[in-house]
Length: 201
Image 1: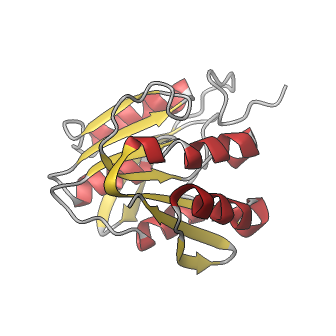
Image 2: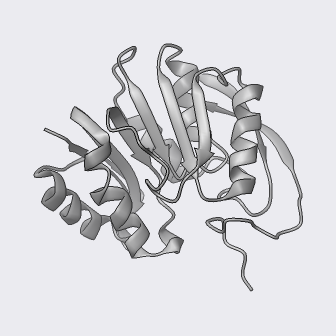
């Protein structure tokens, strides 16, 4: 059986890697492993999203849905020391790595990292930003859930920002975001990757 990164308990044999990568102007240290998404480096979609997203600072409360080993949430927490970031995933191996990476980069006090299948275990409804590099291999319905249910967890004026490749459904996701929020914009396009943003008005 193929062991995908969106599996709850990956059974791939452990092969931890320790490496550094600069994101948002900070050199960050990461631990990754088999059974998680993009274990060898920060994937291009994540890098493109981080280059495009706009965070205002101290008033922000951020949710990173499908956080993997944590590059998005951790880099934002490192760059904006006053914000709070919640990070969720279904992959327990990834969550364990994300917690270790938060400690390694001294942002553990700013971050809450816990298991949730999309918004299943998320009660808060006042996020200013929900971010996702969604697990497209988990299926179209998972991506659609992340988009549609984001609205009920955002405060007025909040934003949903996601990254998708054109060939993996960016045009249909853009249409769904327009239908759900009444607005959508392309923050950035690069090598087939779309950074899409909708505001909860």
